[in-house]
Length: 105
Image: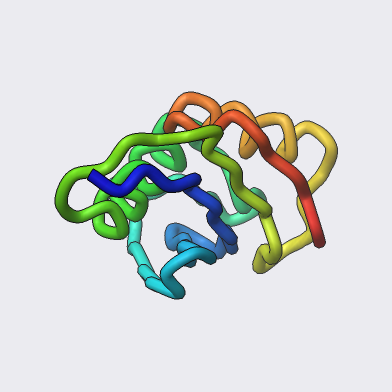
């Protein structure tokens, strides 16, 4: 089994995330099954954002794998993320299994 570090780029849009695995250049554009945005907030429902992120990551990780220091960079968002929304996004990524999170907006 090839052990590799999960290294993701994440972009967040209204009820949609785009995730790219930097090591394989695999890309997923995942629509939310359960909406996480509202009229006034990009991330109004953190649990649904986490669900959408997990679905996107699962699509990238087909077959056997072992996570080795998983990391993600949030590289884009449809709207500017407020400090409180950054905390929500970081928490959702941590709950999805990502340990090293940076914002490059």
